[in-house]
Image 1: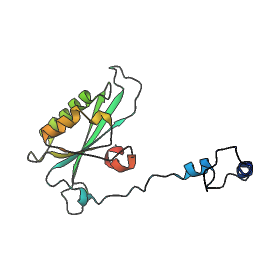
Image 2: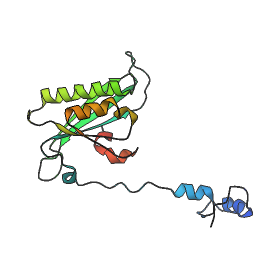
Image 3: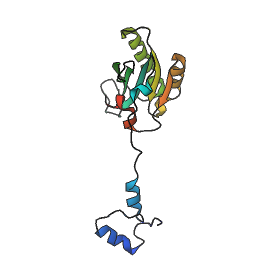
Length: 171
């Protein structure tokens, strides 16, 4: 059945009066049924990074500015999957307050995170080998160059799906 523009058919008034049960001719019904594909948990062992860390990053909102003019926060977690049960063996969190989401500021904050991890990490031989984010222009350009320079493999969730980057989304 082809979609019928709202209000052009007599059936539509009856359809609405009946409580709007699903009808394939109704544009609103069809759009309301559109859903994302199901989010599936990936076995942590399948995304293991070998002997290195996985750095996951994302932003929190655009907030009212603080006293220093910061409006966004870059939240990152570092974790590894070296244990036999497949659960994260180590996890460490970072937060950087930024005035904006420009790639230059993001790259600088990520570089600071990496330096702090090297300084504070208990295993000096282990480093970040994968960098995971959602698809955001703030993680392109200078951030991509930083990832290449540091030897990180950059991966993404393929668009905005908060369920797909759950480790950092929970922070």
